[in-house]
Length: 157
Image (cartoon, rainbow, N blue to C red; front, side, top):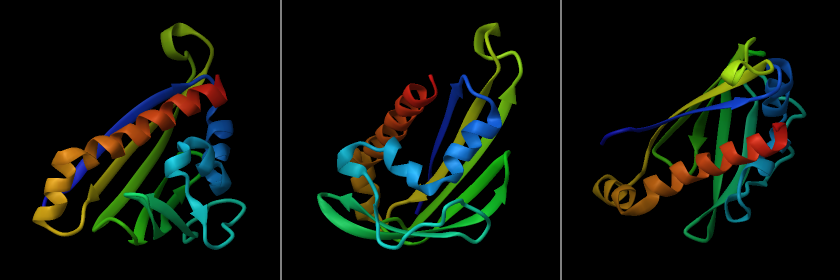
């Protein structure tokens, strides 16, 4: 069963510590998703992420709530962190976040931060998962990250 990979980069006109602090607060996750995909907390998340932090929430999959538990496997503030699914809607989910401060900024402007994401995932159910991916699930997942990038640019200017 193949793994799928999404790689994204978005430049934000804010310094790395500010951007990282936003990402390290799990309650900000909801601000980055459209209403239909917004996570609903099943247990109060920690005030700040750290290695070993566990997040329990539900997300809508085909209109039905699905429980999802992820753990922060690596945390190196303010440079990077990795979260991975312990159980949930995917057969595999690993999300690597990296924050690169760029002193010159995009286009020679003000300093800012390049946020890089690499998501490696696999849908469940073997052939049915591959078919669902081909029929639109992959585009929908990629669309969530496009939405997230737009929201980040709105939030950070």
